[in-house]
Image (cartoon, rainbow, N blue to C red; front, top):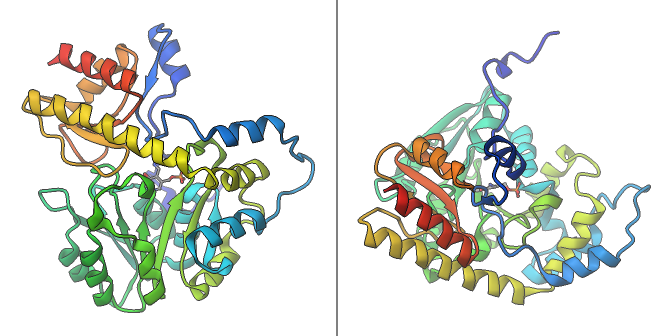
Length: 360
Ligand code: PMP
């Protein structure tokens, strides 16, 4: 077989271990997974009731245009229906965008550490990857990113709140940056953790799509909406950009269950508010622990924290695994010496912190 030579040396994405794997490996009964920034409170009760009662059609293809969800989202966000593009998670939108815009003659600019799928897909397309390190305080180095842009740049990726560091780009800085980006460059603003943000300086990045046709915002139902299993993400941008991307999208890329559950989930903003509040108290638990133990834990606007550990993060993550807690080691995420811990329920946060305390 003659594989695409760009796949040489590439590995598939390795998510954190599954609960089943850890159970088998360590013979444990109760495992707490705080590794993939899912919603520990599940999803809206309205969605659960709908799934139980829906009697969904299985033999027919889903609506490839996701009409019901499109209309629901379009009216919630105040954007036109043709300003939306749906994907099997925002993961698939990253694939679609990369296929549509990147080839060997392009380069793409992104922060590091950040979500690794931007560079993974750029490499598959054969584009040059220009990673601009975050500043020491983990904020985006927007000036550095501007300097990295040239005539061959097709996409600039921004992640706010950033995974794995949790910081946001303040609205005014984001706007000033986008003003300076040449019009031939598509600016992706990945807002996977949008619903968790409480800092007013964040504003709403969506506003920028009104004035700048080269801005595309990515959001997802996987995080605050608690629908990671159903794989629904969406992009919001100008009709021109969406129309260019749409032919790259597989025809039935979001499924019946995902589309319908996402539309129901939008109706339950009380669930999102409750998730946000519980997430804030959860983050306080981690911040207090860090302060009490003299560990760095930078302010996160997402549903995870970066917690400093003294010594190797890989070793700390392995040790937590033995105690039934799955987290991500920063050694693998570009933040060595830190663990990335998803904020869980109060009891699970307490349990994890008690385990960490024993290990200190
Ligand atoms: N962007 C960021 C910043 C993420 O952290 C994630 C998930 N870890 C995604 C995109 C992809 O999420 P999904 O495909 O579930 O929408």
